[in-house]
Length: 334
Image (cartoon, rainbow, N blue to C red; front, side, top):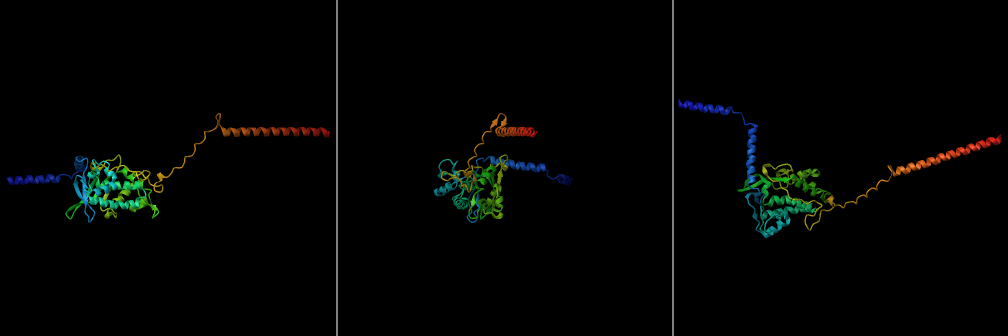
């Protein structure tokens, strides 16, 4: 009897569970909100950020995943190179530059230096543009707090090492636009075209700020030159980053400004803002009025009146002379 009762209870439980409806939209929203809340708490517990990688695989140049604090380069020569190509990284570094800690290894510094040589050769006509382009990769690679705006999108285990295959990179829209504007007019003398058209990949002359970032972040799967896919996500001023990320935003240099104390602004050929401005037109003379009437109209009216009076007087005088002559001839013939 007890066995039958137990079977009945199990059977009833199965029927009740099968009678339940599928999860509603509200259930999914609650799960999603809970997921966001947990990630937001995780981000809030590390407001200063940390490293998401350190070092790279020399065979495929993919970065090695690392979740921890920044490390010292430990090599004065590499420190000098990093300070040369990424001087803005040292703006907020406490203590001596030699003791600064970053999320990039000495090998990553050398690799970045080689890649920046290509950028300088292509966009070097405008130092301001080069500096802005460097900053977006300097901070992505070496910033000791880059977990605040960068997050691994996909990882894999290769040769026993955890490799980052794809990266989410949140960028302030204003920074992206200023970056594009500083490079938009740089010429490529070899092709007599805009250099940014080549840098923007397939978009060519239709390039804009968002398309430029997408082209620079395109990896081999997308036909790009980046060793891995970088998904740049612009964040507008009135928009919040997903999962509590803080969008990357560092001061940019306009093409009409000097990138360093030793370099001048971009030339007039590569930046219309530096071209000499024409002298402004002299101000128009104040209007000449006679009473409430325009001066020129008054003179024309006065001239017309005087001419009209002269013509009328001449007509009357001619008519009078003709009349006297006619009367004299009439009496003489009589």
